[in-house]
Image (cartoon, rainbow, N blue to C red; front, side, top):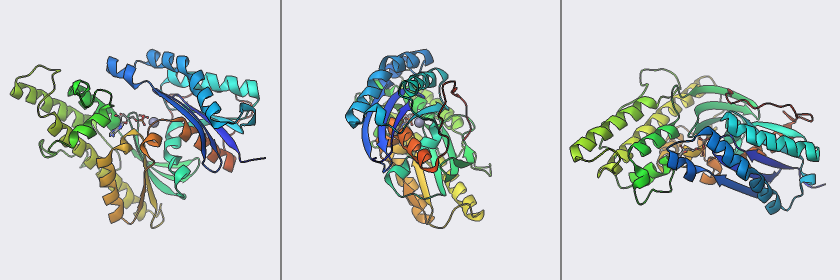
Length: 358
Ligand code: KG4
Ligand code: ZN
């Protein structure tokens, strides 16, 4: 018998993803369908629309991943699927589809926590040992945790309001970047990063969220609100309608990106200091950064400077593995198979959980 092989299925938000990964971390097959073009048009994800798109596409996506892997479903060791946290209607599509496969092919089922999967992805590519510190920054989540094992996470802090990707998306929308010729097919975060190259990050005054709070939590809503007010002010100064693209859009993008990055760095630095004090991490420990916002080059560079100065190693999976995908789910399945944790042989009445702590 060859290496163990897992099929992973992800539908927790707006990406339909599937992949087949073996226990050596080899990605044998993968397929991903993003719904972003549809959701950009409506200015946000409408849950029943996301559900319908998952339903329309999941069979094709899973089959593409399996066929490109050259593995027959009969030879899979298990099927792993995101079951928490996420949008209820979206999670339901992946779970129902997976349980049908599980039943039809009599395979073990491995329920996966979406954020744990983001956190463990780095281990697919690099020999990152436990324990390590993880920073997850995406459109729906924002947290810092110590990862002691495959299913052993210690939460250090999280966002008290919205996630950084959500703030980036909202400011991008308020700036009407979708109308900018360079940015029409980009996510909000990508559009902000792209425009920032051409802007002055000192254009807006610096504000420091939560500088009085002696913990590792985050807050982005105040920042986002401050920048939205600045945008309104500049629309009046430039004498343009709400919805037109400001001539200083790049400056606002650069200032906002810097503010978001600065806040993330400050809270991460606090977490590292805390972990060192409490001896939660060994010297030379790793910081793993994942989630959609981790593909931001500016934020990565600041994190690199931070880890260099704190004697830590930084690992960021490549962009395509930082955003939602089936590979990270399949890999989490492999990690669980290796330690024998959370493998279900009779899962047919298994339920998803839209809200789930780490
Ligand atoms: O991980 P992900 O695909 O989905 C969630 O689980 O949320 O993250 C999507 C988020 C979006 O908010 C998007 O604007 C943001 O990641 N994002 C970025 C970049 N690329 C995607 N944010 C900043 N810079 C980027 N280059
Ligand atoms: Zn995600």
